[in-house]
Image (tube, rainbow, N blue to C red; front, side, top):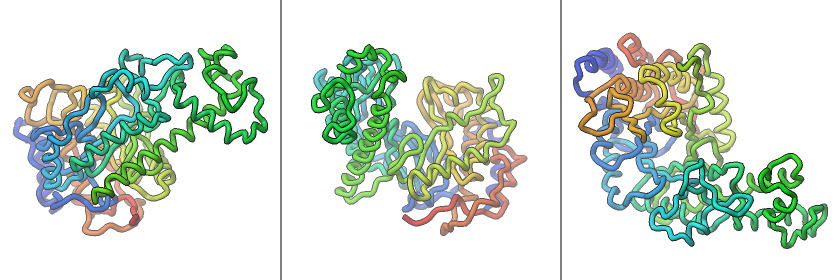
Length: 452
């Protein structure tokens, strides 16, 4: 099987040059059904958004085990019930179907929210006024101390569970608050309760306001700190930061428990990840972001990053308190930064070199198949605008396709062991005929995994 795959890979550049259609993922490597244990998944892809047969066709090309962000609620949500028939079709391809939501962005009037509802959910600045999140008028950040906001987030998870998703990607679980946000009435109330636990019966409390009725916004205003609430001269700044860490963790735990409980009530099990290393998850999924290396406007591959990928894997296991899969991906950022800000040739080269390092470090790379800002791996142009303009194949598609085949042939096994990856190869992913021999090597076990 590996020899046959090597021949296919060797011929792939010729297919691309001839402009012929990119072949489907090799049937010999395709799973007959989705994995039952997430530790057995080998091929992850970003497929944002699957809302039609076109999205499924792209998924069919890469043989993914896990379709990340195939659905994603950011602003106005689609009708997930109408999209539900897509899930069993993805299962027939051997893939787990992933949905997800933002836990941060909250737009004025989204999904029919009234002004009253928005005001109850949105956080505030130190002056009590609404804040434009990321400087975007009409966009707010939700308050994780607002019961209504947590219920709102949970409602979109329930809808996607009802429609059949196997996995939920929870974006920005700390609500991505800026320094001038987080001072809504709900959070002020929760901070007061935090301080009452911190200073029982008022012992050690030195602020010039009674603890029982303490209003942090009023305190900041009275001390001239409303414009700089985190300034060193604010004696309560460290307490506020400690409260935020505790509150954010509590809110995430509450959400994750509620999601799992709802799935269980439907006789289901739904996997969870955050966007970034987090506790209470079944897999860690995080953007490359800080490990992205550039020099003089081009990607910098001059030094190995194997140790950095491996350190992230160790951190992911430690925070999850078990050996969960750790999956890197390229988030789209603002306008596609940084992934779409480099030429396709640089993206292909990055996947070949850094992708191999990531696998050798015991992690996975989620190959970019489809996303916002026109990201489409089946196209030659960086960001085509319509299906009619999409050529049938491209270098990006070839690299995604061959990378998925490589990952599948090396990591998929009839049974998984907890063997070490110390002998894993770190040669580039086979995105050209010269590196297709990688698939002829004896398959090594994937990242160590243990049963839950």
